[in-house]
Amino acid sequence: MAASTFADRPLKKLVLFDVDGTLSPARRQASPEMLELLRELRKKVVIGFVGGSDLVKITEQLAVNGSNPLLEFDYAFPENGLSAYKAGELISTQSFIQFLGEEKHKKLVNFILHYVADMDIPIKRGTFVEFRASMVNVSPIGRNASQAERDEFERFDKTHQLRAAFVNALKENFPDYGLTYSIGGQISFDIFPHGWDKTYALSHVESEGFEEIHFFGDKTFPGGNDYEIFSDPRTIGHTVTSPDDTTRILKELFF
Ligand code: M1P
Image (spheres, rainbow, N blue to C red):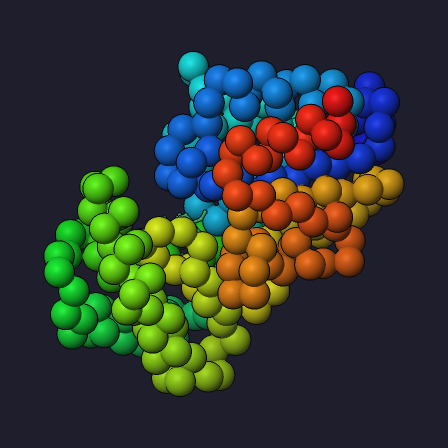
């Protein structure tokens, strides 16, 4: 689509949002008030989300009262923008398997499953490795954990740093795989090729010539999955502590 796609916006600015902890509480639904605020914001600027999760999960979080996130946002960047949508249309997608090759992928998954099997943690559920188009997501407790079990694991991991140790073991064992490890949520971490972090999403908006690109995220510290895009010279980064904090800053800056 041509640059005129957004000719109706008075400000030539793009505002990008992380999802978990920024637009919605972690792994839960955004509020109707947040959706309403974003609709008002969209009358002024171009908006998009950049999430680590895949589109199915992000849709569960951002589809408020049946709304379609692909239509509520000008840009939708699930999986860090490795899948990219503009004005509801898929414009680009990338493949983790193509990058790594089946043989290396198999070795990586085998190592992960052995490591999980040897972990002595209070409880385990199911789906310890989730294969996504552009990344692998690894969870010691398993992605089938309930919300209460997630909260408990997160507390446990804060004390025991299990995910950090797991990531170190992977770095040691696969130094030549060209992979980045990112602890972004409550119970898991993501694995993807170097550069396939949230800055990847910026490559899809470069041609639009926005005067400013704002980014809002809660995990903006080094090692967090918002760090790279937050600290990228192409963005104006905002650290938030919750969706309410996002609302507060948006009102200060744009209303
Ligand atoms: O968006 C942040 C993270 O959200 C989920 O993490 P968890 O299940 O650990 O809370 C995952 O979808 C993860 O990939 C993502 O980075």
